[in-house]
Amino acid sequence: MKHSPEDLAKADNFYSFLHKRWRFFPDGVRMNGALVRNYYPYNIKNIDIEEVWEDTSRGYPRLLASKLLDKFGGWKDDAHYAGLAGRLVAGAESVCGPGRVRHWEATPEWRLVLGGGGSVFETSLLLHPVHGFPYLPASSLKGLARSWVLERFFATAPDSEADYPLTNAEHRALTTSEDFCRMFGCPAESRPVLFKDGKPEMDGSKRQKLGKAEPVALHPNESLEHQGELSFFDALPAASPRGKIVVDLVNPHVPEYYRERPSASPPTDTQQPIPVMFLAVERLPFRFVLGQRPGSRGGTVSLGDQRGPMLEVAATALRSALSDKGLGAKTAVGYGFFV
Image (cartoon, rainbow, N blue to C red; front, side):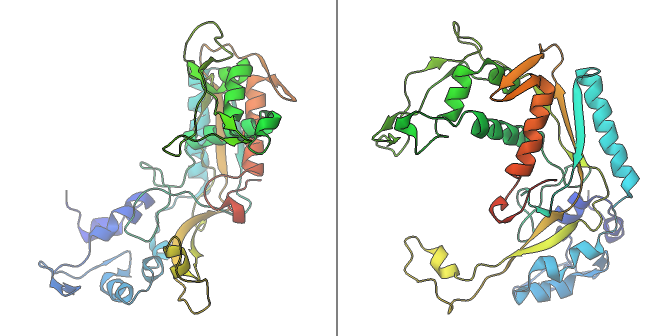
């Protein structure tokens, strides 16, 4: 269905506004030397499309040329998003059962960068495909918590692997910890990476050589996969994203040096910087929800020095991972850490 400019001007979904709006550019004008038919001029959300095309043809970044964040007016008030987060908690409790859900609110200490596929702009931002606001996928949260547990409790390696303590951390967890398998799930078996002279051994295709398959701790006498007992839910905004989505910048100063490998150009100040704009989330609080799968055993688990009810240990792991490891891109320069 083709939307009119008036329909688009009333957009209240940031996902549609960001990813779909740009397709409706004025027809009948010359763009890049080609004539586009059926021209009718209009503005969408007070954005002068012709002016934007003219600016971007001179290399001006589209995110700035469009003044995108200033033009979208579809955000609701804080109570609307708090209500959505509350319904998420209620839904989790109805699925998992009373007393089998933990939830809390956390806010990025500064900015958060999560990619979301292709966009007509330079880079994209992960947005909920239905509601259109930034969110944190459950799969990312589970992976973050699992990674933190592996680094925290299973990084002790034998002397032959001392320089690569995390290479077989997952194998150690799967084959020695029944509670790890119960919490996060496990395959039917696990194969360790082989080491030679203190380094992972490689085959002719530069892939790590794997050893003999071993049974996991949960089913030592049979080959069975196991679904994890924890249920991770998407984290939704607990307040309005209005004013919390910002245009950020990464600016490679030596692009010719990075463009070629091995590089024929030294990293000198004579090269032209290439600024790249991207969208980031700044200090937007999120509601995190963690549950225990219906029918699962639960009970007390033990991971390293952490011992207690499964939900409490898992919630502690996720909270610690969000504050210690961070989520998303650019964590090495301070993005993605929660408080």
